[in-house]
Length: 269
Image 1 (cartoon, rainbow, N blue to C red):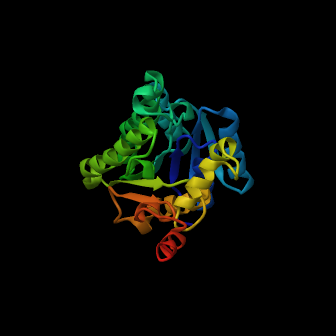
Image 2: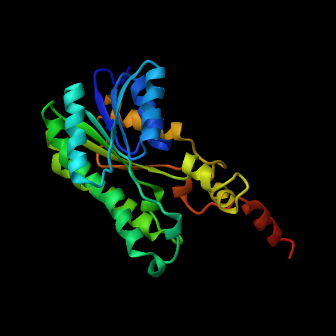
Image 3: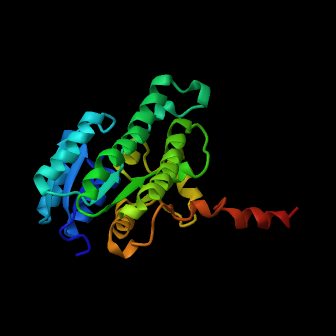
């Protein structure tokens, strides 16, 4: 088991990518603290971990709250005695905010920064001192391919995700010599509960996103969890400060799914 005797704290893990990573870490021997503002979802993640024979606890908190974030780290130390791995996973994507920049409300903009960026700063601030007590640790941030390039109507989300990538690099420079390794995962479109809730398989947005992916399908949370496990393990000991896309090839370039058909039509004119 790659994470035996290690303790992991995972924010926003009551569903989707966070839940998949929590379960994967527990299967590999980690003791897991699951966080979410959704009590039912967070406790469900813990129940799933225990059903598979793992060890987990739930801590309810809005991770943009500094007091709660500090309490959660103390809770982890009080129950498991150490902290080795932190997953910063919280995000705020309000589809009502999907619109040109000047039409985004101030409330949505501020909430996106509070949940998606302030919480990552707080995670670093309170987790790093705890990790240093046991000789170091790994902090994994969930960003997005949206942080690597622009997109229509997603400024409130993409700007935060870009900031996370740069934050990861800065912390790597600040703390690497103290054995704190930090990396950033940048998922493309992943089939989470939120995506399934808003978009059916035939929804134009979902079909558009799928057609943009060279592999030809949307990703699965378990695939992101596999990458997170590798990055958290000693196998990735020389990977630090990096932003790694997991996107089916989206960041390779502009993919046109019917390109052959379009090119072929040129000779017919």
